[in-house]
Length: 381
Image 1 (cartoon, rainbow, N blue to C red):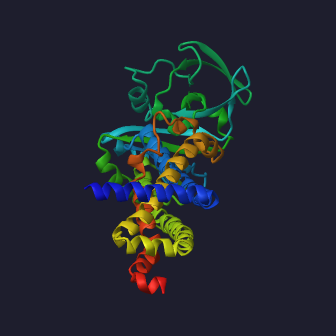
Image 2 (tube, helix red, strand yellow):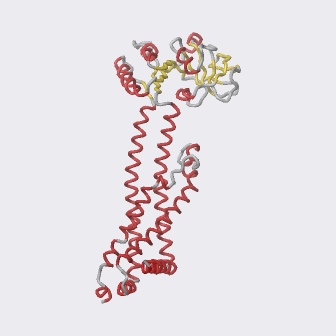
Image 3 (cartoon, one colour):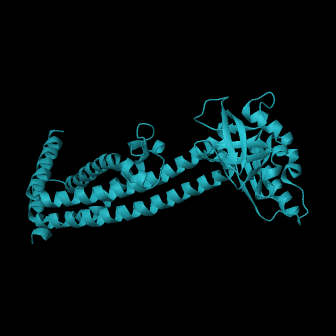
């Protein structure tokens, strides 16, 4: 045991002595390894943040949600309207058919508002979403940032409405995209018939498991009834997108990891071989004094591991410092970039990179391991 301790102490002194003798080689290895680890960490963090953004989007709208949009039929077309065609959906969930004008309304502060026209088929769905026992006002403004129940004058083309402000439910963002919505009953919207109108349906299924089947049957029905141009959106479809992102991340992780590992093997291996050749006679002398080949192999492997792990932790610190700036420029929401909420640079999130560095450090010294197996006499001769 004492001999092993002495061997460990001596080899450690040898490592530090060579580091002080060739600080440029040490700095080059650490700097290159930090750069490669930083690139890999940012690549992996980008994919993880993309997954988080999609998950947040799904959670925000709800997995059981579907919205259907279609251009309103022309006078020459003969087909049922969406609210009539899909009225059976009210039996399996919250069903809200509506129409939206392509012309925006305008508030007193000149802010633009989307105009929604609803009819009798829409009232049960509106009551359910708003949490009403019955319709409160026929014209109302669903908007954040305004006192509830206040009256707001809204201008649509040349017509003015006094709309009561209500707080919109979160699901309304599927329609509004965070803009205010002016709801007008169909009976008061005849003056807007000259404007283009888009038919839409917002549907919340009672059971998200059944939603995919409902979507497929809805699309089949629309095609059968001659709806050529429509857009059907649902977070349940984003689940497939999320799986695709995860698959791409795994492939990128494998390819990027292989690239990082290869460069580390080439750079660390080349420098290690160069240092070995510089100290070949001293190494042979150690062996002639009884130092085992395994001890010398371990010396080179431990040196590589120490430098790589220093580089990894250095890259993690740099990544945390520049994380917000890099991914804010990439277009991610600021809410996703708070490391206190989610930190993609924790060790638990980067076992793959740590394992890769350990394997790369071992592969990098394989030429030295082969050279160390040569007999002492052959080396010195």
